[in-house]
Image (cartoon, rainbow, N blue to C red; front, side):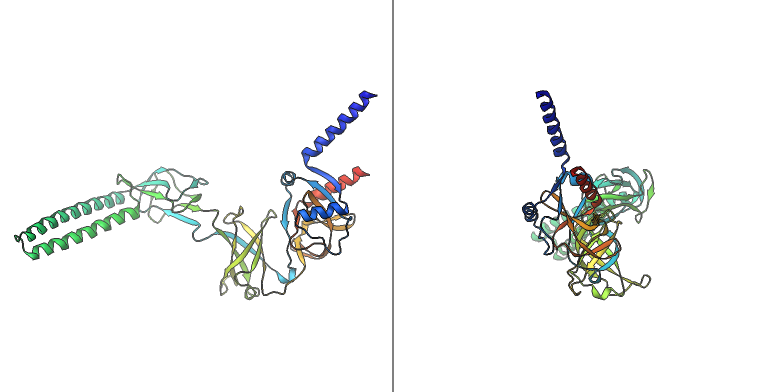
Length: 390
């Protein structure tokens, strides 16, 4: 008998450890427990939501990430008040650099490849060039002439002070020294602009910004011209979104309008309109709105969708969520709201649907956080838990 009890206790303990390690458990939220979780998560219960009706899933943050469940905040703004448009992530004017050689020549060294990180001022390649040698020689000649002119000026000054030389000779020496110094400065600037190497045999291809190499067309030994693009550098932290706006919607948009950028994997990123072109493109018949966003993993060239909420639009109390966030449980539409311990299946009333989104006219309030992607996993786990309970 004691042995049977020991086996039973051991089995229960093992089950508890497995459930704890997974971070995923089913729990019926009582009225008090639901209120506590909502308060901890900064959420507000809807007026029509009855306490004790919602079902909860306990889930750790680690388990949420492992399951690929994307959580996102909700905000008001129905279909009528939004402008839905397609956009492309692009580098800001200071976030991308095109590198060329400053002189024609052959590539002798390559230090960076596509994808490599680059610091501002770092050398990416060296091009050996006869033009570079000429520039370096001009710099050396100009420097020597400037030194000679300074020596001659000092001698004429002493002779003039001793009344041996005429003032005219002294002034002539001053003019020649000034001209020689100016030529030396010009040659020095030319060498610096070309980024001539210390030995004067080639030019350095260096990046003016920090970032990563996004394009390269170099081969060792290839002969390149000054206008040839050798590298393209992009800083992933300096990006914006260029959104194409129809001529009908363009007058409704103004700088400062709120924008929700949606990526292909279901993520949402907050942004705002920085500017919009005053006219339409003659070919596309569309205006372009520049949207400022936090980088958040965006890459130049990435296609996104933008939901623009004009400030001049009539304020709507309807909440719009991804269509996949709405799940059917026992014949009811529910949305899984994030709580302090996991998620709560919140019954909602759905209005219009379209373009992968759904309007929630009742059951949610602005500021709550929901499961926006892979919410079906929560529905599956909820059904599994109910089956085990029965």
